[in-house]
Image (cartoon, rainbow, N blue to C red; front, side, top):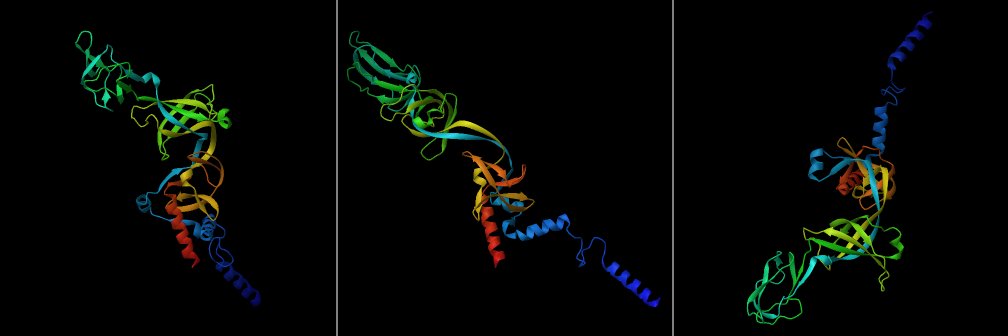
Length: 316
């Protein structure tokens, strides 16, 4: 009876040592969600970094929620800026005579109705004004005081508030190009300078290059485009509505994987992506990131550098 009582006491002591919810080693709750998350973070310590919000702002780090996007499949064309022929005027003397006064300066801007020169008529010996028929820039100036007028134009005025961009469309792209397609124009430094739409596609091919011209009419009130200028055009030919995409500039490469960095509180974590279609600004995400997740869009390379630095420190 005494031995039975001792056994009962021993069982009671063991039961007290194993508190409810503890593992067999008495280390606290077993396999809780918080513990699993901690373990996951501990095993991936080299793929995350902690940066305070104030520090991130000073670094120029910006984030945005991952969301759907419309991707624009594009064709790249080249072309030149041209003046609209209906906005170019060659100004000639109305009657034969001698130029007595020149009031307009080369390359100056003139208003419609402005007096360009005074000419003395050979018949009446009276001066009459030569006026600008349109507003624009004097791109040619041939008038000299004392010279006799002839059939040649004395001034050429060009209104560049609206210009044409003539794009060369080659055989491999002809089936994709049509009137109405949106066009983005870039200069030689690959900076966007204007946007418009294809107004018409030519019916004849150029003999030498065998390209077909596609015309884009541009409102050029700012003067960003100049006749004779070479441009590159990105033409939207197909649109794809994708459920999830990230900005192209956000993507970095770590260990041969394409990644973005998700912001969770003040922690930035690597998210390996499976990518799909893309355009000039966005890339479709097939897996690896949840909709609505805050990911780094600007200066993501700084997050990559900090993570790689942290990983190297852990390795040592």
